[in-house]
Length: 324
Image 1 (cartoon, rainbow, N blue to C red):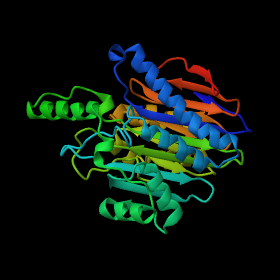
Image 2 (cartoon, rainbow, N blue to C red):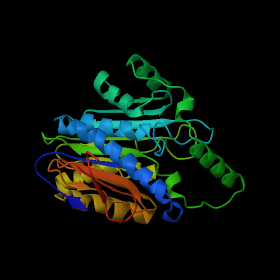
Image 3 (spheres, rainbow, N blue to C red):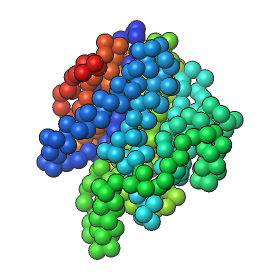
């Protein structure tokens, strides 16, 4: 799927791939996910509508997703195997290719703002663990107690996974356990692109494991000469294939369209080798691509006309006006 508009602006978001099994998704739950996607789109749309930058728009959209406990980022993040939260985030802008990333933190209310602070307030790109937490205090970010991130659904998911492992049962194929991520990409009225991604990681991951989300060039990438990408999926595969940068390079050097490059990486390369997941991408011409190779991906986009488009499975997009 690719749509373009050489003027104005565009914002696309995802709330993770490998969605809840459709057979187990109630209409009320489905409506709640669509509402959460619209709220995130609206947060970024308001920035872009006021001629704000793409990087501020993606940050605003991701903050909203981090605040929503339905999604695996910020409040509602999954637990690692030790019953702790370890959150990752990254942000990048395409004009100068400035970037910021953090990994393994629990404390800053909005991890994406921690990544943005790294980009804007430090000479570095990537902070980890205790050093990342110390930097966030120095940057004046809001902190909350660990209990703020807790949700019963995520705790239950951890217990179920630990029990499955203890009983040596086969993998149940639950894609959502491995693909929980949120992200946003945008192109502003000046033609600059940006991307932001945030995650709690994989349910019951080993402490210290880092996925593709904070790895610049893998789960998060932005370049005005190519495109902006935010990924969600089995992170190890996305790291090995440097997915974000690879899509952008195929456009720059292979003269592929955004859709061609995105589809080849997600559908033809990652899919067959077990790298399930998806990406959202936008280029400076306001083309967008949102391919995924699993059962679904919480996703949406909005353009200057102010119409929300949201979807979960392989289905038609729901549309709603931004002022509804």
